[in-house]
Length: 390
Image (cartoon, rainbow, N blue to C red; front, top):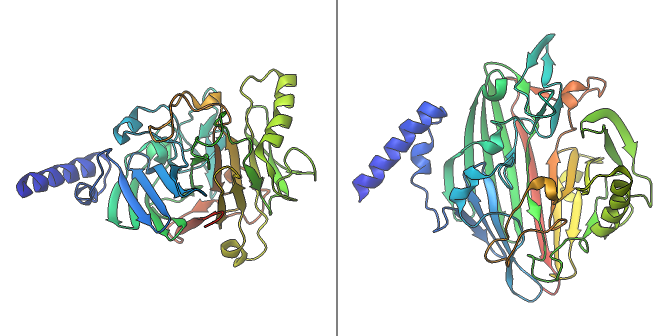
């Protein structure tokens, strides 16, 4: 039995080094998975499961106000089904090397223009790192202990990006908290980095109301008084717009139901003939001081049904907010969430990231968008959970 396990590990290591250039596949083969092919970490009041396909979060269990453990994120029951998903990234996976759109599918470094492999808008833009973006890759696992897991990935010029980028992603849970830490080391050539982790939340676990939607969830973005303008294709124009108090995008002045903003967006969609109407905007996070990023939440999401409140802290300067819609495709609820498909407005994603398409907007002075061997890229996000009555 030990010989078979060792042989499997050696074979996996050779295959990974040959196909992905990673020396960590031997370790990956040794870390334990559950019966669904997932890696579980846990601490008091919180339990998470992952797949190494896209380093995607598959489950997040929290006890609600009634003491019942519920799964509050979208995902698949069987981890082996993730490679067959058509989404970019895999559902709840990493978004990289470059989150969002890169207009023109190109960028400039020291006077040299680099063209990458476009995958959107008839070959005129790059979306979420391209068809071979980090959210579509199989990550290896360097460590996996009770409350932490570290994924690693070596990007060998995928999607036309020059250079090799070595990425390390660590998820750690402590009582009622989940922390994400990214670290990327560029090798050989510099290039753009803009990373995120996409997670679609329903704080009720689809159990507490008949519609199974998040329209009654309340959202507060206390530092998001501005948002990034986009054109009709969804590509950032480089302009920044004000979120007027009382308007559709006013989540800064007070907490408000997500449904209020969706209702205003629906009216706008009806006028334009858009059948897939979702809340979809990228907000600027106007942090006060460096310490403020650890102490003041960038976003607060809460549900009166489950009594769960989630606070998001991050050092990144933008937050992409979107609700689940038809464009995300059909997805069934997990077996512990009920039956049927995820309905429109059934979940909401809060993607922390850098300023969108900043690499193509040099007028945004002093924005760090290109990373080389002279600097290690790091970023973090922390989710803190509390439950009413507990």
